Length: 352
Image 1 (cartoon, one colour):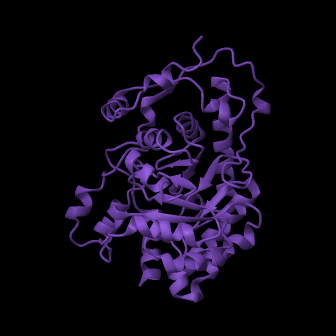
Image 2 (cartoon, rainbow, N blue to C red; image 1 turned 60 degrees about the vertical axis):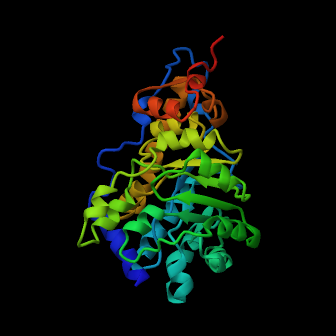
């Protein structure tokens, strides 16, 4: 049943509009201050990061997409080849199906076969304490992600809506495994309060996965006969730009900003707001359904646009990009001010 659901999710994401309808990421409210005197050589800009254990040539993760159905094997192979070629991170979908049905393991471990050296991120649910070591072993994972998806579960036909004990389960997984642990949302964002609580459980990374990209309430709505709740909550969540500010200002661990990131310019804004890297899922799935070359070309365009954004603000590396001068306006500004975050600190950077 889980395998069939994975195939349905893949097909829906490939063929239907599953993005947020009205709520946006908030990155349109973020504007860089153009630097007419950048004083750097664009060709020498360093895009690499070591914040996640291994060096990545780009601060980019293909975030959890798929696995657990035979069709997923070819997609994961293409993604893995591209991730290894471009030296970016790769996250796999929930591994529960392979742990409960070992015949499906190959749809996941095909990733390590084709990406022997880059970062691979395993994936289990927060309540699946007993699956944690198996998930790592199946994938030879460098990081284990624990996914949070209460919105999806609440809309899903087969959803589990009992979240009592989730926080303690996360702490137990951290104590039980021998690799760093990432906690990731699945499209509704993470608040400052939740980020602090997660950090108190000694997790190593957060992928905030904010609202504005793929709506998993929307994905599940396509599977429902009664679509009332799915359509009502389709746009639920914290916009990605806002969640990026909230999380990065509240914890002292590396943060991935994902959820509606579509270009290197979006990525530059997310990093300037405090993220250490960004993630994308749906664009990579769409490209993987075309070819490996299509994935690589997409990554290379991402690289070009990130480098150009960095050149135009005078940032020669990722850490300098984090201190670049920007303005937050509109609804994003209003939301952050209501939540008590000082948006002026981003505007007044580097002013002599």
